[in-house]
Image (cartoon, rainbow, N blue to C red):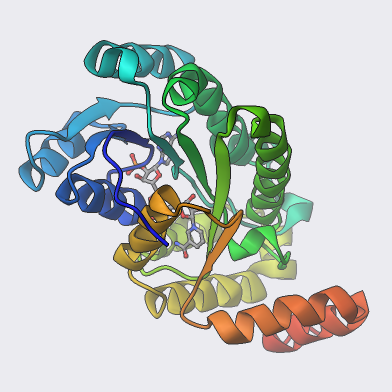
Length: 290
Ligand SMILES: NC(=O)c1ccc[n+]([C@@H]2O[C@H](COP(=O)([O-])OP(=O)(O)OC[C@H]3O[C@@H](n4cnc5c(N)ncnc54)[C@H](OP(=O)(O)O)[C@@H]3O)[C@@H](O)[C@H]2O)c1
């Protein structure tokens, strides 16, 4: 059963996609929303579509001074009442064959998708504790099954699953819920970003990397773009986030996907089938043969 609650919520990565949809939905529902964006232009844009209760805050989750000033803004606005929710939504996709993935790119994937989430959570936890609020982390089906060429993303989302599980138990004594929302493909801004950078990525590969992986890597990214564009709308993920925020007894995980039944079945099978059988399914899809 859900109960509408009133209070303040911070959402990271609210310029586009799930973050923006969640910020606008919760604003509409009467929450006091702090929408984290990285650019002034995005702050102006979200303000155009929201009520006076929505406050954009400049928040790059990798910049400790921005995290600090964001917490100061939120604290000075909400005072003693505390924070009802923190939605750790900001995320990026780093892809490429692991053999040639620049170590700095791998680090950056973790900096944004893992370290940044923890830094933001630590900073807002005192305010969350005050209101016995909730932390909602946006994971992914990529945190359940690893795929070729998405090792960095999958590793970051697997890490987020582990962090969420540990934190949920650590915060249990205070009644603070830590929840994972795990979407499948989403028709957000993400596929456009992947498409826009695809040619550049291929051009930046060394000739030897391109010769070995170029075609199949391009094919997998095209598959990802296609499946994301056919995915669920960010607004549907936002509805699930609202549910996680308001449920009297929230689930620890909310799986949200257009192909929920099939994906659930595949995830179940992945647990019982031998690794090589699961590999074969993915390799066949990608026509990866030796
Ligand atoms: N798209 C999918 O199919 C899919 C599937 C499963 C899970 N997810 C997860 O869902 C979440 C939202 O993704 P989306 O699909 O809505 O993608 P999106 O439209 O690309 O949104 C990503 C958001 O993260 C922000 N961001 C990137 N780097 C940041 C940083 N260093 N600090 C703060 N914000 C940063 C972006 O801001 P800028 O505009 O400033 O770059 C943007 O607002 C992510 O955690 C993603 O991993 C997505």
